[in-house]
Figure 1 (tube, rainbow, N blue to C red):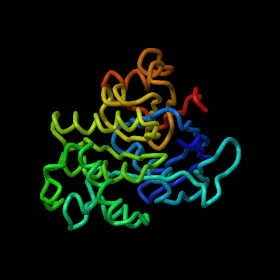
Figure 2: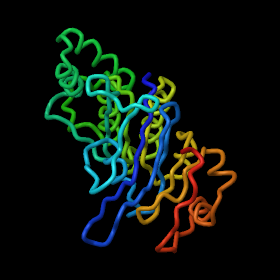
Figure 3: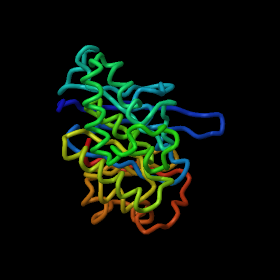
Figure 4: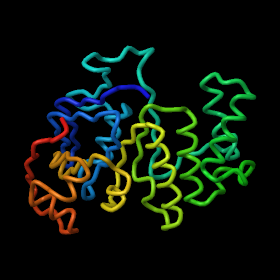
Length: 252
């Protein structure tokens, strides 16, 4: 695994409705899975897209570094992202994985073997020849994650991957995420589910109105929260303040 560190500095990104994401500094170590929590409209998905590089902030930057040096283009750790609603090709489940592997210059034989391997990891081998878009929501999400993992990414970004799934489908997706963590893939994941963050995360971020209210280890976040806002969120109470002030990050 790459020893990359993800660093964001002076991030700002606003919209015409008055919302502004404003994060002075954020450092995410490669060796720990990170869960991003927060109410609706907190800016979680916006932050995820900026960190992944598919959204350019209006000011500031987010970059990968090796130690203190920015990565060169040809050595930059690879990213993959899975969204809440799976984006699948009009192909079979197997061909969806094969397609991205062939785009990475794997031979037809190598792509087929690796695609089968990752379908098995997703427990979808019996649906290899089924149209991907005909699968259930949970099956589509597992296929999306399997496709992303087949690329052997250093970082995997997940935007509420179980938001619309039933408990059984959610458990299967969570199992894949835990296996990715155990394979030393850095996970950065947005979720509304506090208990899911506790199950899957090692570090936890809490966002509210575009501000970073907390960045703590999982144990500290759940057992020794620093602010009333964090305690309220864990307890399921609404975060009423409109001008929440960010707290000191323990991990940066």
